Amino acid sequence: MYALGTHLLVELRECNAKILSNLKEVQTALINAAKIAEATIVEVAFHEFNPFGISGMVIIAESHLSIHTWPEYKYAAVDIFTCGNTIKPEKAVSYLIKKFQSKNPSVVELKRGISPTNEKLPHKINMDQDSESPQPAFSINQKF
Amino acid sequence: MYALGTHLLVELRECNAKILSNLKEVQTALINAAKIAEATIVEVAFHEFNPFGISGMVIIAESHLSIHTWPEYKYAAVDIFTCGNTIKPEKAVSYLIKKFQSKNPSVVELKRGISPTNEKLPHKINMDQDSESPQPAFSINQKF
Image (cartoon, rainbow over all chains, first blue to last red):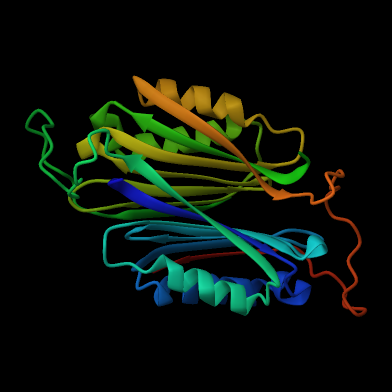
């Protein structure tokens, strides 16, 4: 069905625990995955937990990629949420499976924002905002 | 079944388009949702697109919240991915439905990292890392 977004839920089991616990490797992998999917990266934020485990996200112009790693279980949960027709999220999945050496991966594909009439949903149609003009794009990036 | 994470996929339809297109309101809403869920916020990154539409993520110690808004369709896709027993993601969902004035919301709950034997999965068990010590926690936050 026609939808605004495609959401891949990626379960990476039986990975290489050392890679999953290395902040730089995990961050580089997710950024590379976004690039391989031909996405446009706009924000990146990662966090490493004590004693181990990494959470990270890459906001892309086409939605986002996220990852949470549990090196102690050799497991990572990855989400690749994309919109538009030009992006190739399946390439990102293949890359991440290989990068983390997952011996038992699985992927579920969901549609988000499904068109109730199953009509195409063009992006950025005109919006009635009571004469308010759209604001120029800018971004916020905060750290707590 | 026992799992490492609980993932709520929240479809917010028929929302207030003005709120969905206001960066400050969307960011504040997602941060408040994390707090209402009793999560610990570690990173926040938001981006506003031209001519409209906002993407944002809040990394929490217990995983993440994300949002993508399509004001032109009065629609927002929200994900609330949590782990541990102390967090209350359902409270975050109720808050966001009210905040964005969604007249037609839906929620799907998924388990991520399911225990194949349906045994409890305690967090932060010991990890065999060939004598490598866990690194102290720190974080990276980049903007492109």
